[in-house]
Image (cartoon, rainbow, N blue to C red; front, side):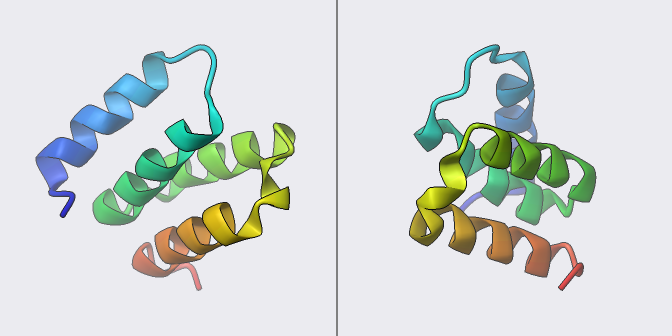
Length: 74
């Protein structure tokens, strides 16, 4: 379970990363849902698309849908 305190720390670490590997995108996406941080979620979504990672829709599609649902955007 990702609580709000851990979600904040995770977002801070993610923001400092210059290079982002595919697996580094899942937890920050989840933390955005926990924090209901739509702005950061959209930035992560743009990173996923710009890096061509949406071809793995099972991994990222589910994470993004979950994040947007928790933020009340869907």
